[in-house]
Length: 393
Image 1 (spheres, rainbow, N blue to C red):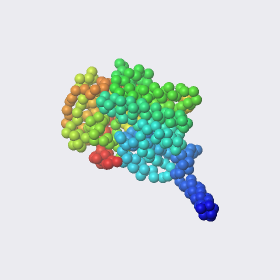
Image 2 (spheres, rainbow, N blue to C red):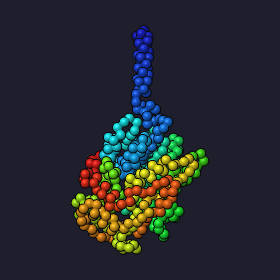
Image 3 (cartoon, rainbow, N blue to C red):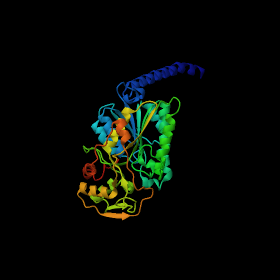
Image 4 (tube, rainbow, N blue to C red):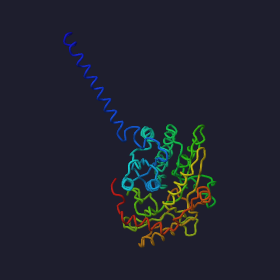
């Protein structure tokens, strides 16, 4: 046995050395290939290139923001778990911007701390636009804890990852729901925040966390918080639109419900609340076109400065009643939509519209798409050509 082992030992050592050499060579080749570790263009900072993480970038607003950023030559990474977003929107963007280093999509849940840390560790982000959130007022009154977890807790995980990986710029997508039902109109940025539904409360909590974090010693954060109002419209060139999942339609935006009624998907439009203290008894809202909204986000990104926080209302400065909105939708679609009037929806408030003076002055932003009928007509064209949305994910 001793003689036999002595004869085999040199042979085994040779095999081990050969294996080590081969393994080293393989690692070297892999490291030279595109997309491995630190050699991916998304994993390194480049002079003159701003790499923006767009959370929720497969959703309605997030996808429009990603489109605008890509058109403006930003590098974009979309992170989305597709619980509310559409892979179809991502595919549209990939088709429009197929060049290497322009756009990447990462399927991930922002509630998973390990996934979030991995994303930040493997990518060199210069800024974060944080859109990802469940965002239906009515649904929030039914699923309280889900909203606090998805909005507040997930934002905390994003901030922790930004702190760990030195990402200093945050554009936060907030909401006028943080104001609740103010005593005076229009709403300014100084209006006290007293949200009356879990959606607004969760967003305000997230804002508070962001503001506290920005004051931390050595944080050097550039923070922009945009509180926007009711979003309508779609890409004027017809490439993107709003396509909520069928099971979420009852919680969705009034524009989606109007279009569903016009398409015959539902028998008619349900208007909830006719006894509010307004001129015609229906709620009054400030409707902002999605194209204007993403323009505000990009202007905020361009104006963001270290150790400064900007808080802005994004709206037209004009309130329209639900009845006015429905009349505009009938004209935009050419369909005499049947209306059913119901009792109020829990968590709603009578009148909300903005004073956009601050954002006009400081960011040089003014809403351009203020014709309600025209914005709805643009969105209607997309809906008619996409009766089933983007199709299955």
